[in-house]
Image 1 (tube, rainbow, N blue to C red):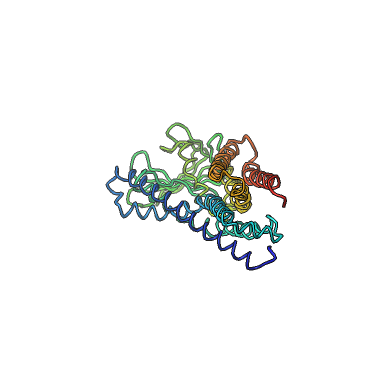
Image 2 (image 1 turned 90 degrees about the horizontal axis):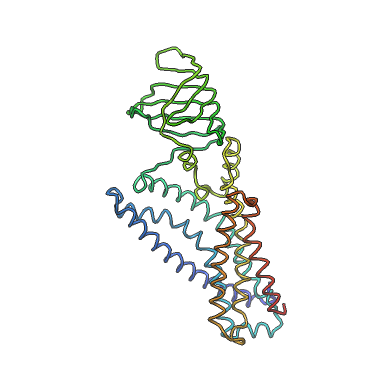
Length: 366
């Protein structure tokens, strides 16, 4: 840290102030846009009242806040160093023998702590509230509710009976996604009034057009003895695409639950690539935020002496959006198995850090 605690506290206070200003401004803008979009989508559905839409917007707010953190760190750092440079405060600090790395230390530590808070505290809150948001979205806007749940003993999903007499709940210990084959299957059948009407235990079930084709099944009905059959068909409106889409999105699973969720997906046979990518992206976020501060410094120091202030700051903003685009592209490659998932998650943070350090070493004496 800086040898003078007073200077350290002053720089830290300035940075936190500008971070708060930018965070509030960015969150207000994207929150307003998101609310307007929800109102537009909800206007086509009578049940989606204004109060329901506003409640959904509030549930989505922590997720938007987490998305706004990197931008707030970047712009907050730019404004902090720009203001101190214009007021010649950094000139005085440098003249006192303080290196750029020393007066960057408070903001670097603060950005890392902000990242730790974001992934350990804000992310779990965001995951819970976003899950509730998606449930309300399915009920009032899209009309699609979650069909599938993952647990330690396998997967559960429900479907509406083709003859519209009720619903069935299906459990499978393992899944072969390529062939859409379930293993160790248990099916519970219910009537319209949720009364239990039967159970099917099968060794396996294959998804065909409009039906589950079960083999070696035991059929059980209330008050009757179980009957064994070699083959049994169960009508369904599910498709492989519907089942895949019903998995909880990575954003609705918190950092603390992601390792267990990934392990269960692997045990049941589904690909955990998206969730593993999200997990490592969260782990890399504090490093990414520290890199944002270093990049912000390269576009904010010595601007008064060299001129071209607005041009360089504008270039810094473009770099920020380029990094955002790079993150999305690399993560898409990771999901497509073009590059390893871990590499895709850590590449943006590593690229930003090495780029920022290289630029700062080139521009400064250190």
